[in-house]
Every structure is written in C-alpha cells, then in structure tokens.
Length: 424
Image 1 (tube, one colour):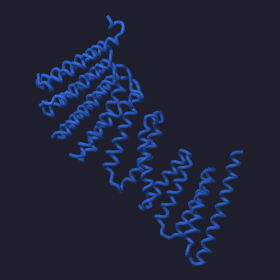
Image 2 (cartoon, rainbow, N blue to C red):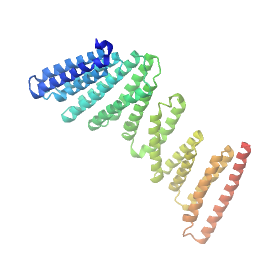
Image 3 (tube, rainbow, N blue to C red):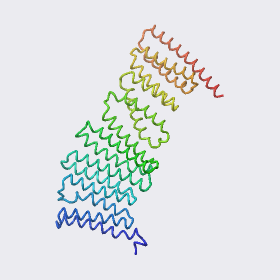
Image 4 (cartoon, one colour):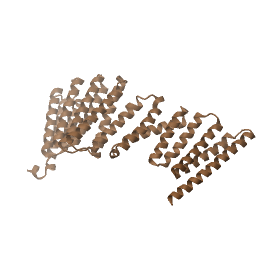
C-alpha cells in the first residue's frame, strides 16, 4: 500500500476529503438548509474526530490543524447556532481538553498551542458581539489557562522534554494574550480586584512550573524563563502601572532597582532567564530618573537616586553610571538649595569629595569624573552666578572658585601619581 511506502503523500487524498466534508456540512446547512444547526454541529464533531484519527494514522499534523479550525470555527459558521454562552464555553472547553490530550499523546506541542489561540480568540469574539456576563468570560479564560497549563506540564513530564528557550518563546504570546483579554474584562467590571486576580494567575503559573520540575526531576530553563517573563508582565502592569500612585512611583522604582540587582546577584545561574525582569526594572528606574532630572520634586529623591547610581558604579565599574550619578546629585542640589552661590559651593564640594574618595580608593575613573563636576561648576559660576552680581561678589566668587580649583588640582595630581605608582 502507498501508506507503507510514502505515508506523507498518501495522506494528501484523505486530507482533501476532510476539507470536502467540512465544506459539505457547512454548505448543506448555510446554503441549502438541508440539515439544521444541531445536525451540522454533530457532523462537525464526527469529522474533527476522524481528522484527528487520520492525523495519527498518517503521522501528519495537517489533520490536527484541520480539526482545530473546523471545531473552533463551527459556532461562527452555523448561522442558527442557538446554544447559550455557557454551552459555547463548555463546547470550546471540551475541544480544548480533546486537543490537549491528543497533543500530549501525539507528541506535538503545536497542536495545543494552536487550539489555545483559537479558544481564547474565538470566545472573545463571541463575547464582544453579545451580552455575556463578565463572570462567564473570566471563568472561561481561567479554565483555558488550567487546561493548557496542565497540558504543557503533562507534555514535559510524559516525554521527558523540559521546555528550552525556543519552546518557551512559543508559549509566551498566548500567555500574554490570555493576560490581556482577561485583564481587559476585569478592568471594566472589577477594577479593584483586577491586579489581585492577575497575581493569582501568576501564582498558578509558578505552581505549574515548580510541579513540572519536581515531577520530571529535570531543570526547565524554558519554564523558568516563562515564569520570569509572566511575572515581569504582571508586576510591571498590574503591580506598578495600575496600582502605584504617581507620587509614589519614584520611591517604588528606587526600591525595585536594588532588589532586582540583589536577586540577580543571588541567582547568577538564572541570568539568561531573568532578563525580562531586568528590562522592566531598568525602564522603570530610567523613566523615574528622567522625571527627577527634568521635573521639580522632593530633593531627597535626587540624592537617593544618586546614591543608587554610585552604588551601581561601585559594583559594576561602569563609567556612564558614575557621570549620571554626578548629574543627578547636582540637580538634586539645585532643587534643595535656592541660593546660587550655595549651589555652586555644593557642586565644588561634590567634586572635591570625589577626588578625596578616588585618592583613598585609588580609583582613576572617579578622579577623572570629578573634572566633569569642576567644569560644570566653573561654567555655572562664570556664566550664571556672577552675571549681574556686584564687583565685590564677583571678586569673592572668583577667589573661592580659584581656591577650589587649586585644591582640586592638587588632589587630582596626587591621585594620578598614586594610581601610576600602583600600576608600576
């Protein structure tokens, strides 16, 4: 038989037959009204099951794709479909279980992933076009989350195939789709509970990932990445954007940034899976840093962010962090002190402090960065502070500026000699 010699080619003819059967059912119901909606629905179920059986027989995923399209599209094409939305949820959920089981035993993750897309999008289209209770919508989405989450877990355990990065990347879009569809409904009807329900879905995902790792007795880098990515989405959107008041946002960012850094240092083996959390934390920190730099606010915030940036430089030795820290501290001094002369004095003391610390730590980069502060101080004094000032004030300002630069030059020269001696 051709099935034994060329299984893939032999499966083309039955595949065409499945398509013809679907078209026949829908044509008989929609165009010629030969069968009613109930009979057409039953026929679709039979053809879908036959398609799954043929897919197993010919080892072809094409039949599973036909079955997914035919089963989830049936409510749209059966014009006289009279089932309630509860019946529709049960119908879709039954097919979700069917395709999940078939996917697990057939060894093809793509089948339950495609079914997940079809279930979520199909029911959402129906819900938007009809008067559906929000509890029904959220319950259906939660049931799909459980069905396909258990399917992914069972697949990894049964086939001893933990998710890798590529497989996890395929699971992330439908997970984000689930979150977006569910949060949209919750935000409209129960806005206060929406973030907490989102956190509950995160806890459920973490349980699935942990159970998969325990039961398979194998690490799952893809599952860990999926957990971190979804945790980032929930914490960033539901936790930060939706729940944190605007006036508290900079303080939250100042707490989150060192916390994420601490977790990263404690888990160096998870750096390849935690990068979504880094991206989100970095974005939040930078956004609030720009807000502090360009919008007047509590001066203490500027000093807090400057200290965090200095700490970041001390840990990573990244020079850009050092210069941004200087800029943040200088802006904070402007917001704290209203006298122009005192502002310049504070900048000069900052530069001298950097030089002294660089000498103690033998840090050439820190010493060189003080030149940036000295230059900004000189420009401010000459172009702004002394503009329109009385002659006596100008003389005093220039003397103070000269003394500061002279002391700074001595310290910088001494720092350079110490560093050169150490290098030699």
